[in-house]
Image: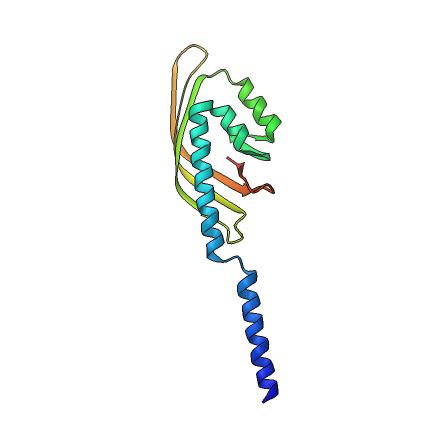
Length: 149
């Protein structure tokens, strides 16, 4: 009888350890809510402080920005990309239609629709609409920053 009791106790302890060491759905749900809020804050900042300021504020240091089939990696490259732009009064509006997060609670992604408008160097109106996809990563300071857009 003792080997069965020992085995049963061992199985129970192993099960409890597995349950407590796995992050579980609650951690992923918390991450989804935090990412959704970060996405809303990002969009709001773009509307009030400008597109480039918002992108630089919400990008991780090693983030990748994919624009016109060109990759800009890191803050310096992104800043240079925005500074070289000849567009005037750029406006970007978007809303996440979907958000998901890893069970570990440290990565996630969003997608949804965006509308971009600006004036080119000649004053001509430019308007584009499409679908965005952003990958988010929780930083060591607990803040969510995008690592790919």
